[in-house]
Length: 191
Image (cartoon, rainbow, N blue to C red; front, side):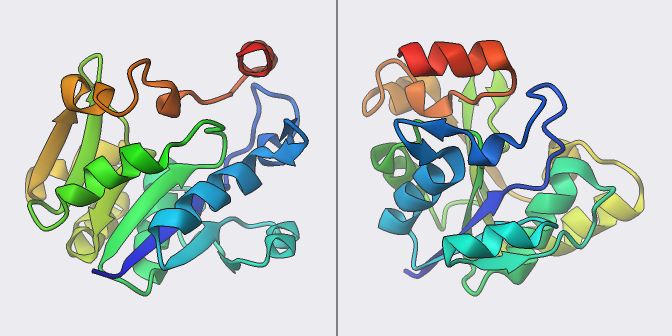
């Protein structure tokens, strides 16, 4: 099975006060850490962003087709631009992504249109697998100004991967850590 991956890098980083994708952790920008992990499980890695500086990563950069669509717009752009039917989507601010966690999701590819971790009862929409079948439903939700990522879930088959299964490969669920504030970054640096 061929797999694409799309990194969401279009956020404004307002809570961080600077572009979090380029903040370094262990001497490496967060987005590079994300790209390196995704490259281990995907045949193609693209970046959804409106800033040309991301081209310096050597990856294909796709402009956000729905810049006012929030995370859903970015995901829809990434899924639409992907070469392959199966698309792993990750935020650029998740420094501890795990190849093993992605493999858990990929093991369920083909069972649903969305394969998504559910942690503490909440979907991890920016650490999930989407298929091209989702694209028209995402576009419809955006057109209707229903911008929550889960707004289109009622129109597709969704498989939630629960904590217990995820903990078999990531006991502390560290892969789902993201850094949105200077405090979260400091905590990640201490980890």
